[in-house]
Length: 133
Image 1 (cartoon, rainbow, N blue to C red):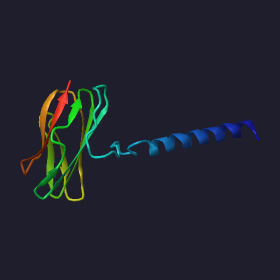
Image 2 (image 1 turned 135 degrees about the horizontal axis):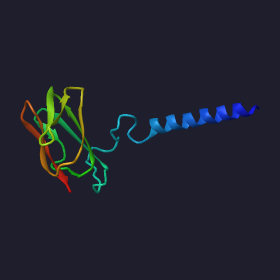
Image 3 (image 1 turned 60 degrees about the vertical axis):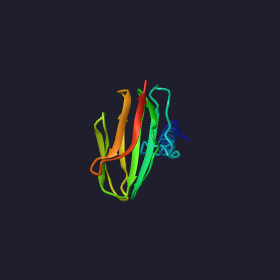
């Protein structure tokens, strides 16, 4: 085997490893972990807090007051049986949601406090997000 073919084979192998790593890492390629629906939080060192909520009729399933820490990457995923806009007050970030089309909001928790997350048009509070120092 020629020396350049060994290098080519090594380069192709390394590229395959990188591609597999990117595809198979936790959360796939969408950036949202595939963990249970309960919120996860970190110690404020730039971790990730993922919160899932669902709305069906008069029922809202969501944690009452999930906690994120300053510096966390916050991901809120909302499923609903109505078309509306999910709004995080105080951070003023929104996402459209509808039947079969979950809304996803991503932001960095850089302001401490307690913030309502609601379906804007229905004026329905889903939960209160606490951002702790």
